[in-house]
Every structure is written in C-alpha cells, then in structure tokens.
Length: 358
Image (cartoon, rainbow, N blue to C red; front, side):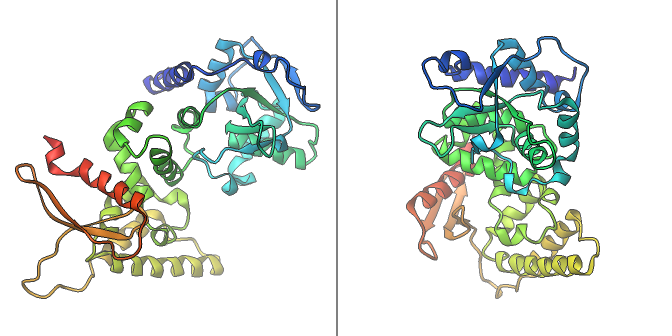
C-alpha cells in the first residue's frame, strides 16, 4: 500500500474520531418514527474482490467496516445535497459517471455507503455529506430501467465543519474533482468554518499553509478568466498561482480581462464549428501574453502594488513592505465594498507581508 493511501486512511479515521459526535444509526433512531422507505440492512463483513468502488473509496469502506455501523436504504430523492461539498452536483452527467454507474449496476447497489445526516427541520429527511457521484449514479439508474434500486447510506451526526473535513478527505485524492471545484470549496470554507484564519484551516485539514494559499489564489480568479478555458478540468492550481497576482495588478488587470474575453469568444466559435477547443496550457500562455501588453506608463511614473477584495474590487495600495519597517498601506475602495471583504483582503495581505516571514 502506498504511503499516500495509508495517510489518507489515517486522516479519515482521525477526522471521524475527532468529531466526537458520530452516533450509530440504531441508537440515534431509538424512539423516532420509522420512514416507510427506510430498511435497515447490514454491510457484508467479508471483504470481496477489489471493485471500482473499493479502489476509488477504500478509506470510507474500511472505516465503515471497522466501526460496524449499520446502514439504511433510502431513495435518492429523500436527501438534499449538502452545499459544502467540493463537487458541483449540477455538472455531473452520465459521461462523467459512466464507469461508476456500470459498477453499481453490476453489484446491484453502491457497496460503499454514502454518508448522510438527519435534517429534522429540512425540506427532506436527510442531507448528503459524502457520495455525490454515487447519489447521481443511483438516481440515473432509477430513471433508466432500475427503478427499485436504493441508495445505501450511513448516518452520521456532524456539524458543518466536521462534515466539511470528512468530505474533503473523501474527495482530496479524486481526479474527477477539479482543482477549481476544490479551490472554491476551500475559499468558502475558510470564511464559513474558520473565521478567515487560514493557518487554523490548514492545521485542521493537515495540509501545508502554502498549498492552501495556492488553492485560494485559484479560487480568487475572476469568472471572466475562468470562462476563457474550455472546461473547468483545464484550469490548474499552477495557473492560479501565476494569474491571480496579475488579476490583482492595477496595471495588468484590464489587459488580462480583455484577453480573456477574446479567448472566450474563440472557444465559443470553435464549439459552434465543431472544432477542438483551445487546450488549457495554450489558454494560460495566451492570457499571460495578453497581460504583458498593457499600455506603458509615462516616464518617471511609479506604480504601487494594489490589493483587492475577494470579489476583485481594488481596496487600496501598498506603500511599503519590509521586514525592518513593517507594512504601510492605504485603504480607499474604488467602489462600494462590504467591511468583511476588506477584512478578508487585509488578512491575506498580513499573512503574506515580509515581517510575518521572520
């Protein structure tokens, strides 16, 4: 077993153990009215030959067997999708889930349970925390000649931060979660669950601060730049590391966005003509090239670096940044902006300031 696989299983086990709120479904159901469509079943205690589901989600399967929690059968339409998951459910399709759909059909169900939590005051009885592709796949099968197939699920009692960590560990190594999906999920989470403190989030997720910073740079790219790429799968973390500072530069931002619009139109024209799209590497290189075509400043004019809100609105200028004299800035938003956005931009600025690297 690879070191990364062992580490991922350990992280998942620690995440569940540290939540401290997981309750076996049989105990939590005591005294609660039974749902007509819910049927208690027991998981197979004898491991079978490795299947697609086991290869793609061995950690969740192992933890489920280890704690020996019961699972229940539910209809996919009995649960809503938790919005805190990294995966964009609306972007799922048969093409993206074809191999998983075939595997579930062959095994007559999702052998690896999804994770749900109860929502007593919600629109539906449950909320799906982990397993969006399995949920989609079973839903698709029910709509296509397999109407009796249920979704096998395990109930956990989780708060939002615990649910985020569990879903993150489940999704972190999956290649079918795009860098952009993960980055935007992290950007939402750092404000929602960690009060904007990136160091705390990195510690809780057992990832480096630099890796988190790189992901958040990708998440901060304007939608105009994202639209220049033919597919979200084409946008990589390394693209964000280069393009994000350019998008925040007062001298280069306009040229970059203008170039992105040119690329968006080219991609649209290619799709209409049935031609292959411009690949991600070429889009990236052309965007960088567009940014370097900004008008030259008058001789003698000095440019001060600017900093922006997460929405892209310019917040102010950096007058000086040195280890000896510290950080000096001016705050003068160019358009109306929420105070929380200003604080978020300040936090990012302070974390990257030279005096903080001592």
